[in-house]
Structure formats: C-alpha cells, structure tokens
Image 1 (cartoon, rainbow, N blue to C red):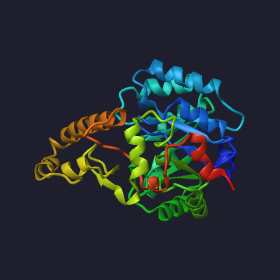
Image 2 (image 1 turned 180 degrees about the vertical axis):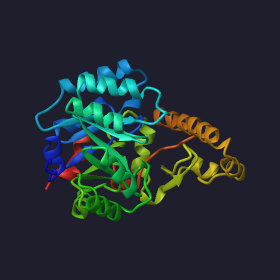
Image 3 (image 1 turned 30 degrees about the vertical axis):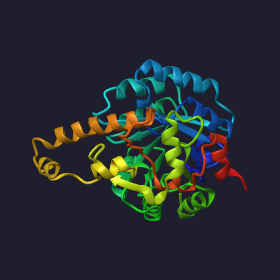
Image 4 (image 1 turned 90 degrees about the horizontal axis):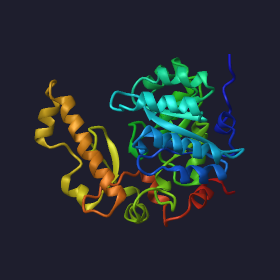
Length: 319
C-alpha cells in the first residue's frame, strides 16, 4: 500500500504547494514557464488549443522549459462534449506530462492510461460522493472545487468540502477556490488540503492570453461584484457583474425554465446555451466588447494591478 504524500510538494516534486490553475482562454505556455521558474506547478486546459498538433507543440515547449522544482500538467474534459478527448489523452501519454487534471465525466480511462506512463491524475470533485467515486478508481489526488472557485464552481464551503474529503478519502486533497493571498492559502492548508489550485488572481498577469480590458476588470472589480449565472452553460458559473450581465440577467427566463423541464428538449437547450455562452466568453476575453462576459472568482478582491506571474506568486510564497 502506497504512503499518502504529506503535501503537494512531495506529490509533484515542487517547492511550494501551489498549482496555477487551468483557465479556459487564459492559461498559456508563458504562464506555465513563469510558474515553473518560481518552483510551483501550472496547468493548461487542452481545449485552449484548437488542434491536437498545437497541443503537442505546447507540451514539447513546456518540457524544454521544465525546471528542477517545477511541474506542468494538462486539464482534460472527459465527457462526450469534448470530441478531442481521446486524442488529447493520447498526446499527453505519448509525450509525457507531470500530471493530468480531469474535469467532468468518468476519469477511469485517463487514470489507467496515464498511470501506465507514470503520469499522476488529479480529479475535479465538488462533493464527497464524487470524491469517493474517483478515489475508488485510483486517482492520485482530488481537486476540491468549492463555492468560492472562479468559473464552474461547487456548492460547498471550502472548509466543509476539504474536511469531508480528507476524512473519508485516503488520497490527498488540493483545494480550488477562494485563495487570493497567503493568509487564505494557509487557511485552506489548515483545513487539511495538501496544496491549493489558484486561478483568478493570474487573469490579471502580463503573461495571460486575454485582453487588457479583461485584466483591468479583475483589478477594478472585487469579490462583491462576482455573481453566479447559468446563462453560459446551464451549469452555475461565476462571472463579473458587468452592465451587460445585469442587462441579460443571471437567472433563467420563464421560457428557459419551461424548456428545461421538457425531457426531450432539455439537453438541446443546454447545448445551445453552452454554444452561445462560450461564444460570448471567447469574444470578451479576446477584445473589448459591450458583451462583457468575464469569468472570475471572488479572489480577485486582492488583485490591485496587472503584474507578472512571478509578482503574483510572491504574494503566496514570500515570508
């Protein structure tokens, strides 16, 4: 029986218990390089690359920049909505990454094939039921996505989720959500997490692949400006409460509620909403537009200027 790692440093061979979280459209190779140069881990969503060849090139570049106490990973959506899932997994296993983070769906295939190549697998979970399921499949750690996470979040408070998972699942728990400074990071560790996955503070980094308007929004707005909407994908998602979001409302319309009760139409309504919502997010992330759908979590409260990834990391790792 393997010994449970004491912390994220031991699990990934890094110096500090931090993963720069995978963020749709935001994460890129430059961010990962900066993270590894500062002896932490970082992860990129596979879906940030339009083609598998682009993903291959990115992995090779990150391998070439790997540091002694840095680590990099790829985030893969493993349900049927990701048509490139099989190819993405194949490339990760063929080239070799330090870890894979799975989101949605059943991660059993990822766990099996990644472990054959010595790649660790961490699984996003939002409650104890999910945690027990993926732990039984043999994953290496749980990413505990709590109610303070940016983007698609969980419903449980950080302390409750971390304590439950740590107590009932015999694998490490990495907390995701609600960390914007060192004090908040230490709080998550005190609950029993072995490390933290931090995303939103890095949106306002020089290296991030988003518009200046998006970055400045993360500086201008704060925790009280974060709202939860189902308008993007049909699943609760945290966004900045811009005038456009106030105009379209975060709630389902009467027609949407009726359609969502129809068994035959429900999945198609959710799919069309996802396509429309994703289009708005992509448009807003890349250029200034009145349709500002900016995904972020309440941890932007501690973001006061656009900085380098290194400067942002110093918030968490400096004494």
